Length: 286
Image (cartoon, rainbow, N blue to C red; front, side, top):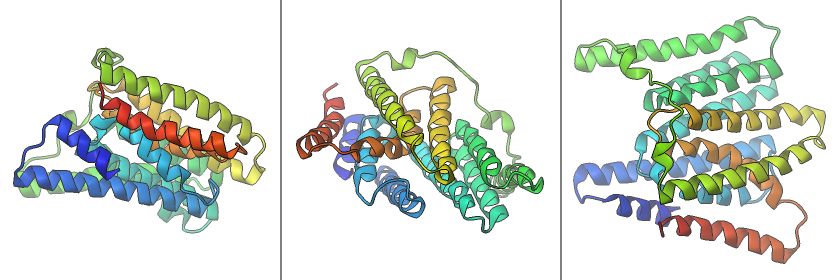
């Protein structure tokens, strides 16, 4: 992950100065923290077997979109989203329901400050409420309170440091279905790889989903919903440059692990891993 992250910054043009070095290592820390948090989530919720396949897939899938490595705001937003998803999945325990809902909403609100359309993941919070604690009407109001808290705190920050109100027009981004920004060698390769992986992994996952115990299906459904919301963000963002595809990596890594953990022979499993290892390096040929 460090090697591929470094190569991406080098190809983007890296300046040796204090601010660039700070951004480089800050983004790297956020990237590694996201991976560690993803590993914690799958262990706490038994989403996969006890293996490193999810970590490997997350590293490979993010490396296929090197533009995300050089976009610190997208990396930071993705970290907050993964934190929020962790709180939503914690709802299955039936403990601290309101606290988890509020925390998830706050994290998604903070994610939206870094990258506006990540606010779409608030749908996952409501889906979590629907799955685990729908009868208490207060639970449906808490996500709105969480987002309002982020907005109020943002106003406090801008008033304190800039003597200005937090302007919503600068915060809200337009919708665009134009894909012209993807029409380049690197963009086409990234889209092609992620599209093939999504279709293949999701098909396998849905087949396995029907065989899972009923009590585990809500959690698996939330992972599928997270992937669908991430795909929706890719479709509607106006400033497309493939960096926004990083939101796909976390749920797709979990979904793809289901395929890698199937009863393949040792040779097939080795081939699968080597293919995924080669893909990130192929992107740098373009």
